[in-house]
Image (tube, rainbow over all chains, first blue to last red; front, top):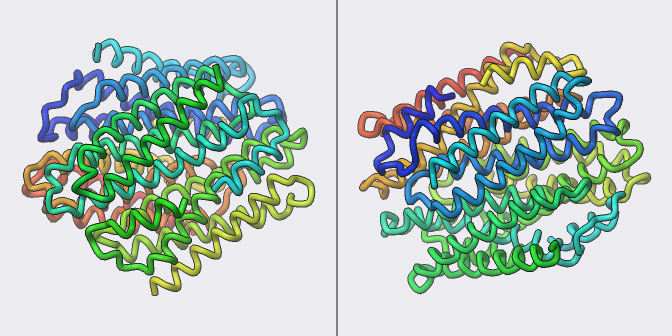
Length: 135
Length: 135
Length: 135
Length: 135
């Protein structure tokens, strides 16, 4: 991923206002988390115990949707809107926290939940670091 | 739109925790705003003065993306996550405010910006009312 | 919805190449279908028989994603790309057909599936009519 | 990316019907292309010559939306729907072809268009290979 994220930022005609390395790290972590959440929801749906996992599926889907919007806004760094970037990153942190907690609760039983919980934690952490860099 | 939004909520097996009328009103306003933003961005791109409208295009696209994620999360009312709903609605209010302000600045010159500004204001208002109803 | 869809098209600086009424009808039908699918997936997840509905949830989610992309592309009528519009509308027809069939199979038991099946049929029909108008 | 894509597929309770390596390669290529298109659109908007790039921005946005939907459908391999997967991959190939052609035309002048054209070509190729593997 980073293979494209960083060069794209370097060729942007406007000077990007946010620390590029933190931004690229956040974008990559959010991309991994988005995919993990969609795949985890689908895997949960195939478990015989799906009835116990419906909350997990939902928060997986919510988290994926918030992550997908966050990536798009972060990739648009021209005319940077600090307030919007911050509000959305905070929503992303909230989604990743909820999803990470829920998936962790199933991590011992389901490997897909364990992998997804890790992706959520890494994403939450990367978003927090970007929020700090933006302040 | 409401033709489907309300009946769908009424047939949900879980009792929805948020005021249904406010929720349906918000979902409809966000859907209208999403479309207005995507169409306004495209119309701006066809104006001869597009160079003056690049900020407008960007915030249109940001606003559409945040709105699209917000609708999806609001439509998933099973296992309702108050914190996430609130954080995302706040990001949506911020996006609609920015986009409404930018489009208003071009409203006299471009009819598509005027219509979009109105859709953003209505969306911002509906999201604020839903946030109040959630509190 | 149409309240914004049609005026937006009328204010677009480029002459839109597709029949506007058919286009607006398709956009509205796809928007209703997108929401119905997301809401139906969430309602299915809350049914005690969720294990029998996992296929329905998946095709709901697939259909919502294809519909969401189709709306966005249809709303961007400047520099109209006939081949892409057609390929995506065909994918949308395929998704609505699959989802309509699956939801129909549960329509007697679950009112949300009945409503969603109807939304899928209407969307499929509107997309087919737009494809014909484009030819 | 692959770090999560492959392990997730390996932990899916249903046997995935498509060749896993091809599927993971396609998912990764589509993810890179999605980001490149969103970033390229934003970079184009900041060029002084934006008026000449409006077609490029639009096809960038269309391509990103089709790619985003395709990834989501490909990640949901439970209850695999061959017809839908194929129709959407074909739309994705069409979008990447159009976007790759348009970006190539600006590749000598704008480095972001050159990078994006490459991402589109790689994505088109990966989708074609997956289509062949599915047949």
